[in-house]
Image (cartoon, rainbow, N blue to C red; front, top):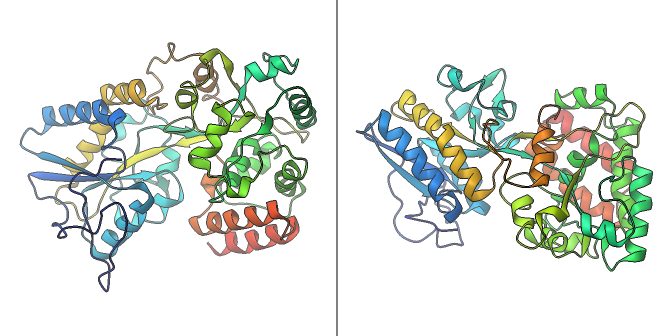
Length: 422
């Protein structure tokens, strides 16, 4: 990732952030003035985001030709540390990029509610829920992010399975895995859990096939019953896939980004729970697999009353800092960053499923067609509803579950306690 004029921020007691050259040079002034808006993100330095950024800047310049916009691309692995330090000091960028969910919700006290500024975009864009807290909206969605279950249609054919009829029940899925592993050289599931992220994809990707509709709705609004048989079943499936040898070897030492995705795209695994946008998605896989060989399936059902759906939310979105000099102008920049022309460029170059679902994706292949067709009946991803603290604990416990050093019951008890306290 290209880092132009990478800012450093001064933490209390003068913490120096190591890596990626971020500690080099003097710390620049924070934020912009009335004639400059400073944007922090981790995207604007990417080549495949260049046309998107230029289109957004052009749209904003039409509205505010007197205001300069400066984008500062931060390294993603340090992004929230740097942003947290800026928030703590009350100085930082005017506009900032967030992942939907906990990372934004934990910081809304430092953000401007955008509801009055983005009212005209409500019908055009989807994915708003991931950027709301307490009934207020704090960022505008740029992309949609979700967790389709991708499968390799060519491996299905090699194994004598019908690629047009992927399994619809968990029993069918496990039986199909056995067939694939017996008749091909591939494993069943590409899983990377070195960082503990694999459990998040597993929970959201497969959860709609396990939880009843009411349980799913209750989970999303915070009424989670961690001791229910169906919640327990998801975590039992997590351990069972490992014990049955359905995952690639060494899942706890395999990075999700991008080693697990490489296992799938190289044809060494028949399935992966991936992403809709950014990385580990249809366009990335298309570099090695023919578009016609990439299938998308819904979660296989293991519980009567479960309704499989595409789990997705707003993926990334731009927010406005409370300390900005002119919130209305900053909000106009957010609107430019979510304008139709800008999002069309982001889809075309980065393969992002944009929050503007009116964008034509008919030329992208069958996998994208399947994903987009699931948006209307899709549901929020289960893991996005959890706090950062609960997610951190779930990541650690997921590794212990795969290694057998903690039981499902003990893990769920710890998660219930953490969730209630967050």
